[in-house]
Length: 118
Image (cartoon, rainbow, N blue to C red; front, top):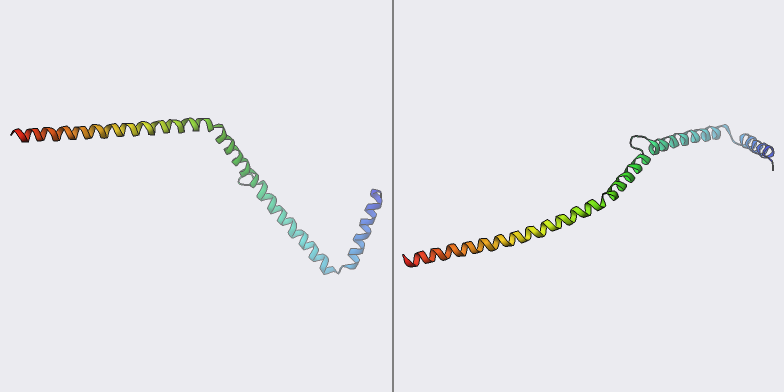
């Protein structure tokens, strides 16, 4: 079928539809098409809005993810340093408790010796 024949058959079908449909149905069909156009326009605005559209937010999310992945090595290094600092702190805390305990024992011993001779 050629394009001319196809176009003629479409026009013929449109004429049949026009003649078979009452005028009220055509108006309703036209109103439905207008509503659909409006909905499509709203959807297009939601998708393509340059301030906060879906595509813009998706691109921002992708940029953030790429940036986080590029900083992954630095993050891992900082986490290892933090773990080293925690281990050092635990060691220092234990040493201070030992020193404090020893100091208390020495002071108690001196007081006992002082009270025993006095």
